[in-house]
Image (cartoon, rainbow, N blue to C red; front, side, top):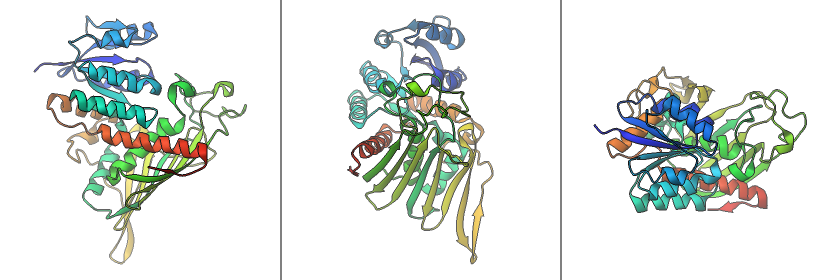
Length: 368
């Protein structure tokens, strides 16, 4: 079997924390052959640690995508460049995995969708939280109709003090926003996927910059103190989304919020037959879902044991989410099947996030 040759654009935190270690385990299926970063030393280091013996290093992504031998590109750059690099890579004949969020606005996300359709190349977005065992269990229950009509959901992405202090996270010009576009996007993606509902109608949002710029704000931050003087994005954001079928989604996202029980990349679902709520350290693959319903004249709740392979992806329960994501993506290319995270779904996530920001700015609901 011919191995897929993969090139990476961006060799920062998400590349080293997720993509490089996951893909380097798939030696029977892929070769990591090209590394690009505007900071050349990062690309050189990545090539030495993860690349093939003849791996190439670039500082200009336009040069990397000229290599006709490369089959797949992973776009791992700040949010503002996702669309431009993805479109160029697709046009160069590459399949593309782009990190979340898809883009900083729906217009740029649409360009990515159009390019994928025009070129016939596969495009997916890095929503790895779908591949957690608790997520797969919850999705299976929803798909089987166990919850009935899911008419209310909460998408949770709350940290008490978890402002990222590396990279360009507080830089609005490069990221397009703060926790809403960074971690809120994961929670919203899970919620829409569980509900299998991608038709938003009305969005109302509130965005706050309350703690990020306070001099004492950085106290107790899990990633060390940030600089309030260079903090440009929101520190919390909240959205109320009404879907076409009448269902309601409440989205909460914060890097810093004065509350005791944070939840990140987790969802609460309320249906006509049952409910589901996610708990635990989900982002560290230590999450679990508790299902609740009425039975035998009483209210009952159940917590499944580790489910192993569920929802059509065998072995997912035994894998870290980053490894499961990599395997499914590479197999989708090799077997010419659809990736689990479809770009059309990720587009709706971007559309809603953009509407929350717009609503917060105008003080009015946004009709989609």
